[in-house]
Length: 118
Image (cartoon, rainbow, N blue to C red; front, side, top):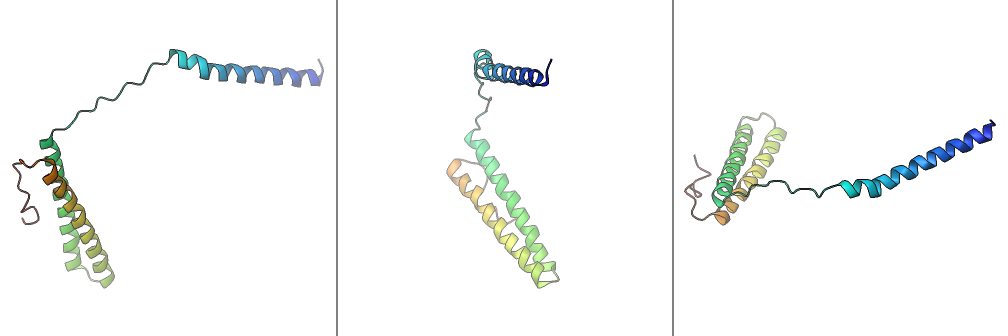
């Protein structure tokens, strides 16, 4: 066997391998593949959504209060400014879920007016 024949036979074998692989991926796998099933997503009731929004608002409120406490105990002006910005940002985040709460379920048994005060 000559060197040229060995190279040519390798080229042909690689070409055939590529053709077989491509034809399987386009035809063979598609023929036996089933449709993807939709995930089983459970819809939440308005009460559940209201409770989640209320709790999310409380978490953000508590986080804002922690930042506000750091403002009072901060030693450097740079730190106090940083924590004040974070507190303001968290208070803004806290208001969004509470606003969604009033849109989600008007008959909720949880109070919406005094969520800021403890």
